[in-house]
Image (cartoon, rainbow, N blue to C red; front, side, top):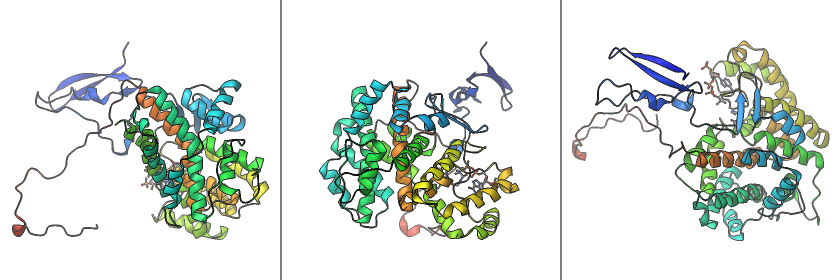
Length: 436
Ligand code: CMC
C-alpha cells in the first residue's frame, strides 16, 4: 500500500492525500493544495536545506546520530585502512571497487593526466607572491576550461569521463604549483613512476635531488586523509557542484565553483581557522577561558559541530590515529596538546553536550598538515584535491538522473509592492547606511 499523509487545509476545510516517497513528501505534490484556481499552491520553505533532500544519491551514506559514514556501502574505517585513494576514487565514481587489472589501468590513466599545459603554468605565474593558494587553485581550475573547450559536451559520457580523469590527474599538480608559487620556488613536473600522493609530495618538496623519495609513512597518511575527505554527500560544495553543473556548465568551472564554496571558514576553510584558533589560545592553561568566551557568544569553536553529525565524526577519529603515525616521523606538533585539552573540556561541558557538538574532520587535520610542513593557507587546498573526486561523482550522478533539471529554487517575496519610480530630484534619502 502506498504510504501517504492526509493534510487538512483549514483555509478551505478540504482534505488532501499526499503520497510519501521513501519517507519524504515531494513538495511539488503540495502545489495541488490551493485555495482556488488562481492560487499558486503550497510551497516548501526551508532556508539552508535543513530538512529538504535535493536529490536521490547512491554514493555516500551518513547516519549522523550514530556517527556512521559509508562510501557505496563500505565503512569509511575499512576503506581508510585497506584501500588507496585512487581505489576509493574509482569506487565513488563507478560504484564498485576495482579489480587489480582495473585499478592498474585506472592508476595508469590518471598518472598520464597529471601534466598541465605550459600556458596554464604561465597563468599561475601571474599571481602576486602572497596570493592565497585557495584563490590560485580556484582560478586555475576554472582556467582549464579554456584549455579543453570540448568539456562543454557534458551529455557525452566519453567526454565526461575524459574530463574526470583530467581533473583528478591535474588538481594535485595545480595545488603543488600554488604552494611552490607562494614560496617562490620553481615548479616541479610530475613523476609518472610515483603513486598519486608520493607524486604530489614530489611536486611540493623536490629540490635539487635527481629523484624525489617520498617518506612512505607520510605518503600513506596523505592517502588516508584524501580518502576521508573524498566525499560527504550533499554538503555545501557538493550542492554548488550539482547546482552549477545543472546548467550544463563544464566540469572545470563547476569544480571551481564548488571549490569556492569549500573555501569558506564554515566549510573546508575551517581547518585553517582551527590553526589560527590554536595559535590564539597559545597554551593549554588558557583553554578554559577560551571556552568560556565561546559560550558567551564570542565566535565559534572551529573544527567543532556539524550539520549532520550529532555524534563523534568518524573521520575525526581516524585523523587522530593518523596524527600519531605522522608525529613519529615529524615529531609531535605542540598544538596537539592544546587541541586535546580543548576537546577534553568541550566534551564535558553542558553547552557542547546539549548542542551535540563534537570535533569534526577539520579539528585535527590541520595539526597533521602543519607537522608535515604545510602553511595553514594550504590546508583547504589539501581538502579540495580529494573532494574533487566527490564533486565529480555527484556531478555525474546528477547528469544521469532523469528527475534532475536546472536547479532553481523558489522564493517567498517579502519586498515592496509595485511602486512609482520618482525622478532623481524628487527622491528623499531613505537608506540609513549602506554597510549595515
Ligand atoms: N562552536 C560553538 N557553538 C557552536 C558551534 C561551534 N563550533 N557550532 C554550532 N554551535 C552552536 C550554535 O551557535 C547553535 O547554538 P544555539 O542553538 O544556542 O543558537 C547550535 O550550536 C546549533 O548550531 P548551528 O549553527 O545551527 O548548526 P549548523 O548545522 O547550521 O552549522 C556548522 C554547522 C559546521 C557550520 C557549525 O557547527 C560551525 O560553524 N562549526 C565551526 C566551523 C567548522 O568546523 N566547520 C567545518 C565543518 S566539517 C567539514 C566541512 O563541512 O567542511
